[in-house]
Image 1 (tube, rainbow, N blue to C red):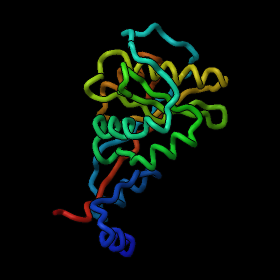
Image 2: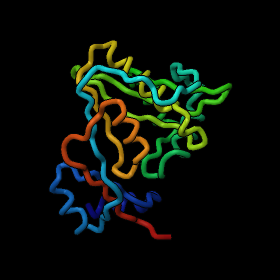
Image 3: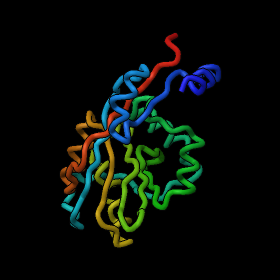
Image 4: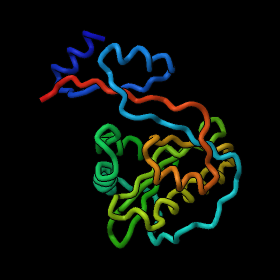
Length: 196
């Protein structure tokens, strides 16, 4: 680890983050100056029902386009801590390679996005983001329904997603749609390489 950290530090990298998966890493990484940041929890939906939305979002849900990448990146950064940010290059790569990538648009502004895929017959919501200024309006439900409809259209089963243990608002939405926590949380740990 030491040569890798030295190289990363010389390249200007400020921190390294690791998922404690397998679980034994949660005991090893703190001895290497990694500190716990949060936990990732997995949710599973074991039915094919779609409940009536609690709120009626009014966004246009459409396929993500290349021209949307800057807005998607902006929303990602507004909604998440730096640990979870995607670069524009990363967003464009995901847009080209993931099976289902949609945006929520109000007037001429992209205010949210979601991408999902089906792996081995199982549907997985990879990411769902709403800009903080537009949260609480039912737009997340619209994106979740669009993602589930895509997965259902491919006869996927079951449906899974991951979220942070401290993201209570997203957990409330997923629980309303029949998702339940499964398995054990996976710790996320970070080591600072630079303090200034």
